[in-house]
Picture 1 (spheres, helix red, strand yellow):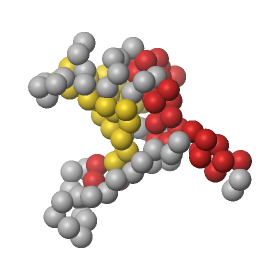
Picture 2: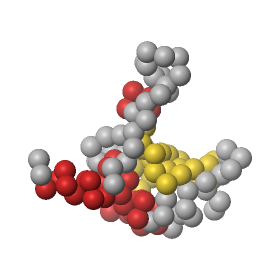
Picture 3: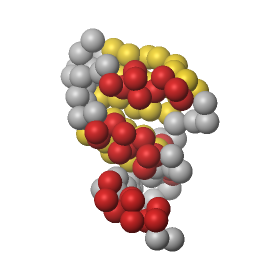
Length: 109
């Protein structure tokens, strides 16, 4: 499996993974449960993972980065493909917080 980019639809219990190779051809389509997500992503070669910036995205971002993947979070209004930004090109960018910064935020409200 030569996956270079993976999109993950985060949900409560069932997650949908969609991966493509360097040519953009579908190389992975899989539904996994929450308990199997980390295990499934660990089996993938290092790749770019895109996810919607939501409540659990920071947690999963840190988990996947520890496995050697590059993670990009996408603004929720841009995930559907219809971004209603003030400009014609969407410039929403979310950066995953560093593990240390995340711990500080959790311990100091």
